[in-house]
Length: 298
Length: 240
Image (cartoon, rainbow over all chains, first blue to last red; front, side):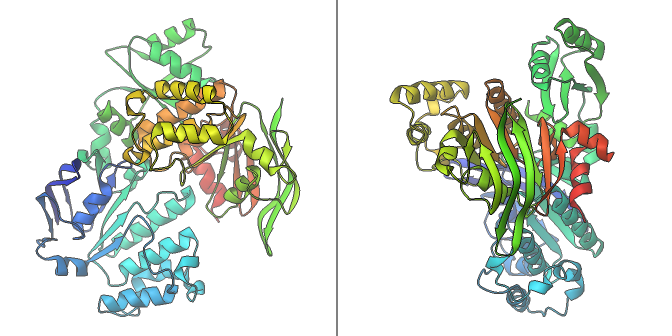
């Protein structure tokens, strides 16, 4: 089990992490969900022993990334947010390098990376610097897995990646999970939270809430309504004018609205009709992780 | 119906590789036009041509009344552009950046003063106006970058993945700024990987392997392909 307890980290007077605590269970696919600047990268660097916290503790199956950093580095596979492999070495050379550094061979754990590596193997002599974004990602993942780590830590592997590649990436992670690898992954995409076993929502260096995706959405605590019409911008402005509106956020096709008290859908519908909106659609909807995140912020 | 972008049979080749394979589409004045597609599908190549940064191999592309092959400099001066990779100068302050962009687009001193004041007021940043850009969070940088991109009131603005990684609240504030700009008469051409943002567009196009696979309003496309969300549509069209 992995235990993060009350971790603090400050940089030049800015508190990047303010008492972060959560637990990751053996074999779990755990998501750290939060926007840019939330502290995800700082947190990961502390977990994998690249950085020391100011206070608090991290325990990876009893190992301390500070005191036991050598052992910790052997059991971790890490994929940072930016491509950081050797651009002038080929795909094959990079993979062999990492295998050697970890005291193993490509052949030993090839079965683990086979599905991923097969997709880039035709280009194995190409320098890593000349690969497309998707291929770089697959190579980085292969290098992080080649020594069969106990814990795989991935820092925003899907940021800037298109929806199809994102989906394929998560399918890869699920397969790796079946091999018994514990995975901690960070993402700014709230919809990816539902793909994890458990998640921690993080913002401004603090954990807002953690648990299974279902536990988190159940904790939303209010009724949520979807509102739709042809002129969404006008609708947005009108919903803001409605005296009983607590929050209103655009969510693509729909506006998501919460009310201040026991106001009902019909009240908003009447208000909108009065303001000249024909047939406004106001329906109760289930909250998503993103609704919970926005709810915690307001 | 006024066409602010007209693309006819656009082909762009790099050697034998066809990045843009006979694209034909147009963008109407006042639209929010979404340009979607997987990485490597040819979006960036096409956008560069539309911005006057690259010339077509063949075909005709008119942007804001200018032919991109014959008058790329005229194209550049009549559009705004903002991307996630580059927005403002980190080591300049807010006002310095606005003055720089205003000067590049040949606004008068008076116009720069007025519009700087308007921007600072709109974003509630008057007190922060002398802070260097690198002290702001990504969300703020993006909002400022958008303001700079439309400082010269272009008729058309290109936004290249403007909200990547930005927090959910700021993303929505950003899209409200887009709505306001459109209400002011600016046409917006945007690429994004957030499929929910595709829903804010009047029409979207999806590029797959250098070709346009779909072009219509989000609701029409979802109905046509029998899917619930834009994400499902994307996966259906782009996945092999």
